[in-house]
Length: 218
Image (cartoon, rainbow, N blue to C red; front, side, top):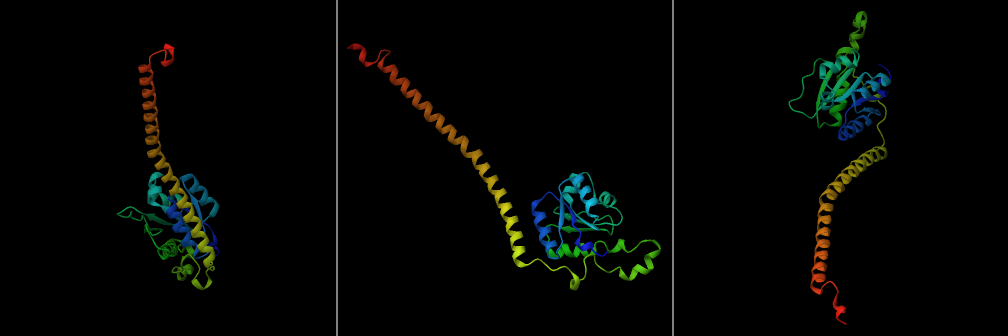
């Protein structure tokens, strides 16, 4: 599995929060995620990366009409699955190739899940199994001594800053839209009432002065 640690990992999740958590965790090993928001995009990501492991949000999996067992069939026998679930109780993994990780999770939780998930299946390939058996405990990422260097603190800080700014911008826009929906109708109603009162007042004054006005007697 040499070089698999450098392949982008397909990430099927629509939650931006999950994207941030996964990207920050993978950055510790110099790895990246290839995000997908739909089943079709996830299939394309699988074809593009040929990654030996995928990360999927359980909520998006169910929304796509799949369950963990069907997901294992979709990704194929040589691919492990890390299933992120914010729902309790956690879904049952259909086999040793699927690891279920509760949300929220830590960076270490995700990296450990990625390391353990593929081991039971990838080392059992036909007649070569006896020769490969001693390597079964090897995790998916390279050992720490040979792992790609982690991002520099400045680069990691920049990544976090960009994601936080994006989340804050989205939240601010939603707040402005909500305030506009609540305040603008009230302001419009107040302006209409004031204008109506002015028109009625002028009508009353005109009725009191008569149709010709005060200058008609001269």
